[in-house]
Amino acid sequence: MQPTAQQWIEHLSLQSQQEGRSHLDLLVDATALDCPVWASRLALPQPLVECPLLAATPERALATQGPILLRLKWAEPSHCAWMAQLLIAHHRNPCYLVIASRWPLENLAAQLMYFTQGVWDGGQKSGIFRFYDPVLFGAVLEQLHPGQTSLLHAGIVHWQWRDRDGVACQVYGLDQPLANNVLPDAPLTLNAYQMDAFAAWSQAERWCRQRLLRSGDYGITLREALAHHVWMAHMAAQRNKAVALELDAYVDEWLAQHSEYSARTWQV
Image 1 (tube, helix red, strand yellow):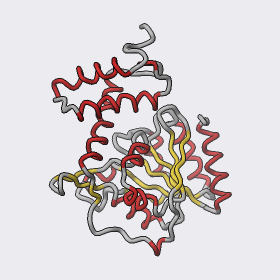
Image 2 (image 1 turned 120 degrees about the vertical axis):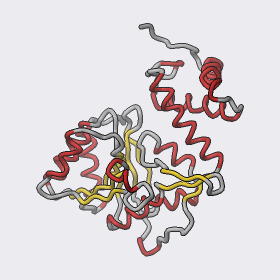
Image 3 (image 1 turned 180 degrees about the vertical axis):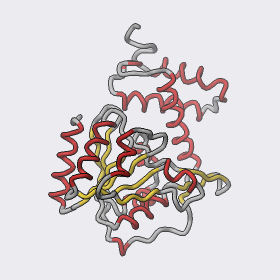
Image 4 (image 1 turned 135 degrees about the vertical axis):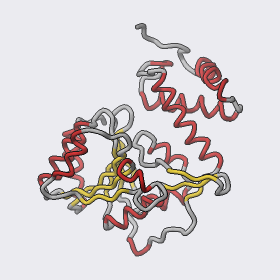
């Protein structure tokens, strides 16, 4: 389903009513988000309750430029109007995940904050884990281990987002009672394969932007499938240990060999 922004808002409102929730949460990726609608939330007559997820992390200096969890009240007209403006303004390039949760906002924020910090290489390296990027969220769910996924889903009724093709996606969480949830003492640990997969996604996203890939390239119509295809090329490059200077050539060759069309199907 590829709903318009207004259709999606109406769907979210009806869904909340059916599930008995008076609020809706947005996890906004504020990285490089500079638009009048985003700034206008600070002037609402009834302020939004918001929790910057990096506020209590080593990256606290970037808290206002990172993931921010917002709770909107359906009964507050200014909240609904602002959300409609945000969803319409970013209909083509979503910067948010829509979350349904029954937990208090501070507890939900603490749960999600845990996932912003990843460690790898036996604990020798650490950094921000961008699970909240809506473009990569589906890939994150595919790569997390079952125990990690269960922890991420603990306080979530369901997640919703729009993929690269504008399709509305939904994944159900576990909706566990807050009393049953305990955050682990150990940080989120990512193994070598997970790090390779996430690195390949970052490389694939950069490749698609730099090459200006569009629907129909390599014989693939859907942008979501096209991005996955380019990701597979970068994973193959990693398996074959293609060094940085050879990466572009390797990916070009892999795509030529594994695509219906080795070049664009359209002409400038």
